[in-house]
Image (tube, rainbow, N blue to C red; front, top):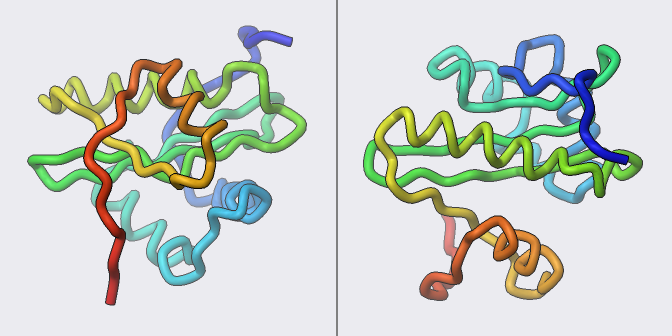
Length: 140
């Protein structure tokens, strides 16, 4: 199956939250500290383009978020509903986010990929991403 005209890539809206959460949970990406509704809505109130979704037939089937600080830009939480994978939706979401960031003046876009997921690393390499330096992710 390929993308067709029924797929819409658009900015996230408040009513999308339950569907986005479900997709993130399905992909093992949901973090209740980061992805709770209040934080997501606060994020999009500051930047409506910070989270985008793929919609088909009125249903949210994919999502991707942007994080930036004026110097670095990251794409995070790319997730597509299982039954819609392999249709190019992830690539379409990535391309839209890259377009947004290029319009904001970013020359590079970064992503974080689990080193234990070579399949996902291969996917991003096919999209033109190269491996950077390896750092240990730490938080407090």
